[in-house]
Image (cartoon, rainbow, N blue to C red; front, side, top):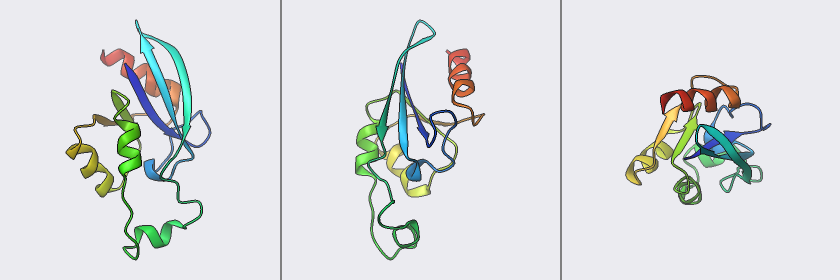
Length: 114
């Protein structure tokens, strides 16, 4: 199972999925994390400024995020915009609201559900 978690510091989940620095990809086998890697956010707003892209002035899509998330089995999130949520549903990508902000606690909670 591969879990994807948005993060800014590799220890806690990012408050807003689309605005995080990077995504942690955690590969789980036999109830253990066997690998972890980090991928920069392909939808970063660092140069554009969030206000313009999310105010409706400029169109932005989430195709790069959807492509990244399709490589995992589950996206954990703290908060995300409704457009991204709709695109995930349309592409049948599994996502779940995290019950903690600590990444290790999130992973432990997912393991308990298995």
